[in-house]
Each structure stands twice: as structure tokens, then as C-alpha cells.
Image (cartoon, rainbow, N blue to C red; front, side, top):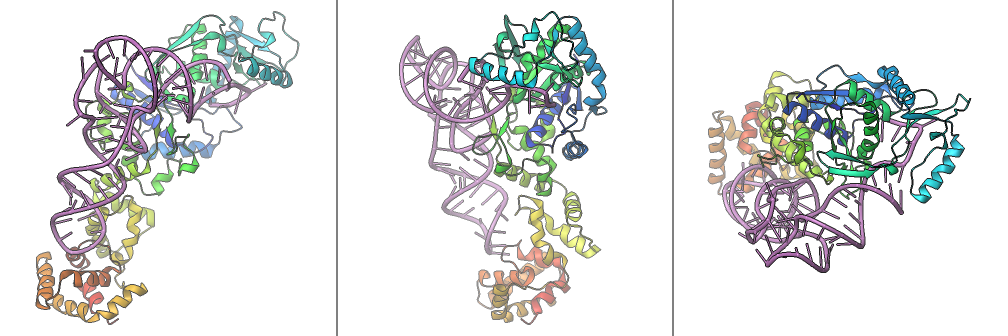
Length: 457
RNA sequence: GGUCCCUUCGUCUAAUGGUUAGGACACCGCCCUUUCACGGCGGCAAUACGAGUUCGAAUCUCGUAGGGAUCACCA
């Protein structure tokens, strides 16, 4: 059997975290079964769809590296086909023209809310059509029996057909609605597995009626639970960024995002490592292991995974991320210093943009400590750093010798390393938290280290 | 309100009727150590509640409470 999945976002805003995860699950499932993963832009609502949103979706998917296996499909390009199906449904008696005005509809809605029954248009059983040109086409939902869906995530769920409303499939302006277009496109694209957000679950019972009327093959369904914020409510701006791409600018890697989102709601059946790589999930993914309950978005966990990813990826990659992000133009020495210290610095941050706090002392050849409290400490201990500067001048430039030099100084002066270390660190970096001294001195090089240590504060 | 879904440490989750209810993140402590980290070791911490079925329930059934989805000429 061939597997075809699709991610079908509507271009009305940026790519949401939840949408991204839906895309990932679709991608994973298709790859796992050597199938196709397609992207379809659901832009039948011309009033709300924008080109910017389409671009935002592409940017997000590109960042994660989960692009469509084939050319992206725009729903709006297939409108004719949707309209044709609407009329087919009408001709076969599975749909009807409804001439209700919006006022009449409002009245019906109020009544339906009161008695708990769906809206039934009086035009449903009217044999004679009105002469008016203003009408919508509604689907004639079955009123008896039940509809059952065997969902990969939700299990077997049944609803009574009487609760199904006669949904509109063609608007009065003759354009098809999502409820119709989506079904037709899924059919024409040969989608075998519909993996989408839980918010579409109720739609499935209604959309499946179209499939039944037309005798089309039913796709399999997997309605995945939504992602919630820390307080358990639907993820929103209150909980921080919900725009996927914002996490790129915050310094997260796409690898981390991919891994985090993959494990949010899905557990690997074999590998219990929480920080498994996304690549492994391609071989292990299964819809059955998706949890039914919504998961909360936890940025601390993302931080942890991101930190692990950063420490695993190549220094060259991090260097590239940094120079692009901050527009750094470095000479060969500056580049060498930064690259040499990146591995040490990465142990101390969760997101790579936090490395910017260390740029100055690493890159700037003429850097000197400026922070007033720290300058004061240097003034009080100027002799010590100058002494060390003097000793290092005669030192062979290897880590062993530098280490030996520092240790000997401490010993000769009958001091503790902790009396000297922090001062030297401030002189070299202007900070109290930094990688180990020997590495700093060695990588900064003789000239720069001596300049900073011999300075008269 | 109707319909549907959900509920295990703070968080992500494991445990397909029998486990001292396991792991990871976070948090706390100890060790390592020239600071901060990394790393290592350890600790805190959960089956929403109430009945029932059973020798035995996190697991099956029912009820209660809480949460979520949906009820558009949006998708």
C-alpha cells in the first residue's frame, strides 16, 4: 500500500508551533512508510489569505527541513473541480439549494442552540426551488443511524447522524467552502492518511458524508491533540512565542525544535532516550503511540534539548549561525579565536545567541575591562596581573606551560589559586564567569593576553 | 447548553489486571574544580475524586469534579 499524507495550513497568519508539529507528524509518518508527504495551501478564503502568510509557512517548513515531496498545491487553483462536485451532489439529491436569509438563519441558530438540535433548513425538503439567485448549497446530511470513525489516535468514536448539520458546501458567491474543497482535494491527491489537529475531529464526521455519497475510498484519520500552554489552556501569545520562526531568532536550532516537537505527544516505542534525534524517529514513528491528551509546551525542556544539540553540532555550523545572525566580519585571527572558544562557551548557554555576551573580549584585539566594579578590583590588584603578565612573557606558548606558570606563581607567592584566578579572569575577559583560564590565555594568544595583563589600571 | 475527547511527579512520559508506580526535564544536595558551566552521584515529587467488578485496579465499569475541542456563507 502506498502512503500519502498532507499538511494543509491556511495562509492566514504565521506558522504556529502546533501547526509545525502537525507537519512533522505528517512528514514522519510518510517517511516511515516510504510514502509521500505533501503540502497544500488552503486558501479558499480569499479575504483572509495573504501572500505574506504563505511565505511565512514556507520559511517555517524550510527552517525545519520538512518540505513537500512534490510541488505545493494551492487549493484556490482547483476551485472548478470543487464546484463541479458540489453540483454533482446537488444533481444526485445529496445536497440542496438553500435560500435562507441571514436574518432567518440567525433565528434558526438561536432556536437550535436552545433545543440542542442542528439547524435544519426548511429548503431541505422543498421540492420547488425559489426563483432567487441568492442561495447556498447545503449537504443533505443523513438523519438516521450513526457515523463511526476509527481514528488512529482517538480510537473508535461514534456520533448520531441527527446531530450533523446540513453544512454549506457552496457559498452564495458560488465559491466552495473548506468543508468541500478539503475533501475533494484529499481525494484527488490520493491522500491515504489525514493527520491533523484535534480541532478538526468534529469536521471528520461531516466530511465523511461527502465521501459516502460519492462512494469514494475513505482515508484513515489521526486527529492529534492540540498543544497547550503551561496553564493548560490553548497555546497562545500569553505563553510566549507561538510563531515557530521566532524560535530561530531566539537562538534555537531547527534540530532541537524538531526533536522537541516530535517527542511532544509522541513516544518512541523502542528508544526511551528523551533526547533522541529526529532522524531516529523517521524509522520508529507510529500513529498509535501518539498520546490522546494534550501536552503542555515547556520551554525549559526545549532549552535542554537545544543545549544538547548545540554541543553536538559542528563548530563551523555554530560559527556560521553566529556570523550570519550578528553580521560579524572577522579577520583570520579573530575567527580562529572564536572558533576555538565556541565549544567551551556552548557548555554555558541554552541558545546560541547568548554567546554574544562573549564576543567583545574574544574578538576585540584592544579589549579592556570597563565595568566599574571590576575595574576597581583590577586597580587594587594591578601588581598581581602585571606580575603574571611578566611571567607569561617568558613562557612557552603551550597549555601545559601556561598552566605551570600560573601554578608556580601562586605557589611562590604562597597564595591560593582562588585569590588570583578571578582577578586574572576579569583582566582578560571583563567577566567573572568564563571558561578556564589556561584555555582563555592560550587561545587569546601571547600579544593580546600580555596587553590585558600588563595594563596599568 | 448540545455533541465529542481528555485526566500518572511542577512538565514530557513509561508501566497492554500482580512493579518498592520507572525514566527524562526542572528543582535541591553532594562530588569534581581556579569562577561559571560540563560531567558523576543522590534527593524531593504522581495514578483527580468516589463507588463497583476482581484474590488483586493506574490499568476494566459507572458516577462526580476539572480541563479541552466543536456547534460560521473561517479553515
